[in-house]
Every structure is written in C-alpha cells, then in structure tokens.
Length: 223
Image 1 (cartoon, rainbow, N blue to C red):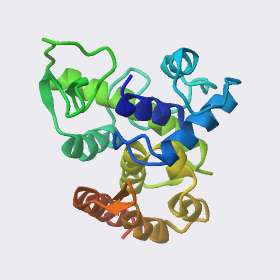
Image 2: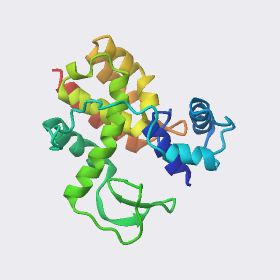
Image 3: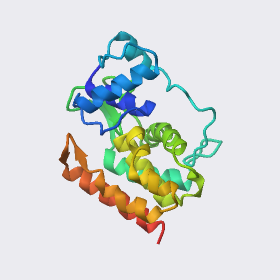
C-alpha cells in the first residue's frame, strides 16, 4: 500500500490531519497511531496487515443514514451536489481512462483509486457519481463536527466540503473554520480558508489557488 493510499483511507475515516501529499512524515505517522488506538490495534505507527485491513474496512463507527445535501433520497444530484462536483472536480481533474499517478497507483476519474486497474474507462456521468460517493464520505465527517450544518448556505457549505475533502476531516474539524462556523461567524470562517495552503510545511501555489477559489465561493454565499 502506498503512502498516498494510506492517507486517502485515513481521510475517509476522519483521521488525516494533513493533506494527501504522499509523504509519510511525523503527522501521518501520528494519524496512523491515533487510528490504531481507536481501533484497538498495536499503536506503533506501522501500517502492517491488521492496520491495512482496518483502513480498508468501512469507516467505523459508520453513522447510520447520515443526511447528505449532495443527493436526494432517490440518488439524484441536488443543486448543492452539482456545485460540489464543479468545484472539487475542477481541482481534482477528470480523466476517463485509468492511469498510473506519480507514485504508480492506478487512478481514474477525479483521482479515484479504490478498485481501479489497468484498462478501465468511465463516462463523465459515472465519474461524477464516483466523486459524489467520495464527497459524501467526507460530508458525513464534516457534518458531525458542525453544530447546524443544514443552516449553512449552499456556497459556504460546498467550500467547507471542498476543503475537508482536500485536507481531511480531522484537520477540518479541528480548524478555526469549523470553530467560527459553529459560533455563527461564517464571514470569519470564510476568511480563514486561505490559511490551509501548505503541504509538508511549505506553501504550495496550487493550494493557494484552490483556497482562493474556495474562499471566493464561500464569501459569495453570505454577501
């Protein structure tokens, strides 16, 4: 299992405190240890067979029937879902045929790696559905740490979701953005988005640009 795969699985479980950057540094090791402790595994920071199996299992605990603003009960994309696909998909990039990413992992659509092998092809509609599936996992974690997520206007909601999808639910929930949103200070929450522009302790221009897009969307929804 590659570091990128480990980080993506940690993020899906809500334990990743930093970005998915393919670097197994002190933060990722600490996240692995925290995940191991929560799952009653040997907390050594090593992703051995038991830890790998736990990471690949469904997120635990799995909230029952957590509401989503991205799709209706019938599975149809809502206006919020369309907005989320446009924002997150635009930054993740769309490729309809499977390919190996920079660390050799088979990837397709908007960065999807689960179950992907050589020679796979998908339509944009199928890729959109895969992206929403992934977004809903992060949405569940995001909603769990927001006091009243359904009271947040659509655009700030999608901006927060895009950020959580990129930096991990754990980081989002511990952020000043979540704290300010829970205090009803949406303006302050939007203004804090650009703070999350680093990977490996260094400012990354791509993250600066992405945060600027997220902030612009966030602010446009409360003005």
